[in-house]
Image 1 (cartoon, rainbow, N blue to C red):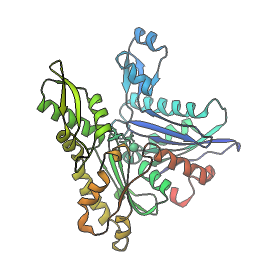
Image 2 (image 1 turned 60 degrees about the horizontal axis):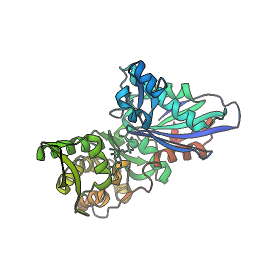
Image 3 (image 1 turned 90 degrees about the horizontal axis):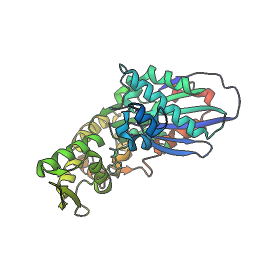
Image 4 (image 1 turned 90 degrees about the vertical axis):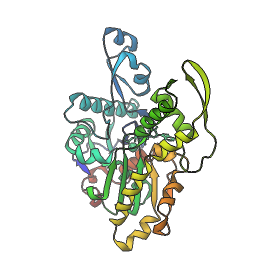
Length: 347
Ligand SMILES: Nc1ncnc2c1ncn2[C@@H]1O[C@H](COP(=O)(O)OP(=O)(O)OP(=O)(O)O)[C@@H](O)[C@H]1O
Ligand SMILES: [Mg+2]
């Protein structure tokens, strides 16, 4: 938890909650604005690119659409801003600035906000992110994503948040305070890892298949599952130029399940980190968030692997795309900005 102190000059403030993710950034404001964009910034490669897109920087979907004309930056590639890279820092800065400009909707009012970042970035990139937030908003705090999820759910104590994102899975034990580094763990096998594995198993089985990681990601997002297959997954793909209908049920199951063993191993370590009298309650309050929580059957699959602990309840949060920014906005609204860096749980 990092805080930036400033003096608030007027009462007419726009409060924003931002969830700065590796793959997508969500924002919500106290004036009802809500949006989610891909965390990517593109700069035209040359004058032709500039002419094509008509501006010197492009964000989100628009940047992905014009990818061949642009140099693209994903500022939080592995859940952190690479400090050595000036362009990563600039891209992160421009991305947050863009998101805030959108969220303002033309208003000149002061903006105060809570920015959630991957747990690893909240530890490794502390100073950097504070500086960034400080430059862009009057009052700002930077918190780790799992904490915002717990805040939204009102589960700040004896609960465990498992945020399955693109670059990282963050597991965080909530003990009524800001989680210390030993209460959280970041695993680098997450959504992107599934996509890479998926590509390699498909190419292993069909060496001539014409697939892209992006098209496989879309298939994963539509059909991804673990445990008993809910349906046979058949997709049409071109193999050696010819369209073929392929049954990829087994491959998809294999790759989706590939991230689970690490999650279980570290979940167990986090459970052991609770006081023995609190462990039972923590086991009944395990919440899955992040885009990866939409993999079908993942809640019961994880619960099944924790059987020997007795009563266990694993639940997927209702709106994984917005829960982080909703938690950030909730915090921004409930606690007056002047107190953000004084309130016990935020200090
Ligand atoms: N329905 C779905 N089934 C399986 N995976 C999905 C689904 N929807 C999204 N995902 C995956 O979830 C990941 C994105 O999740 P999310 O938006 O929570 O990431 P993020 O917050 O940007 O990343 P991180 O938390 O690592 O910073 C991507 O890998 C995406 O493919
Ligand atoms: Mg995330």
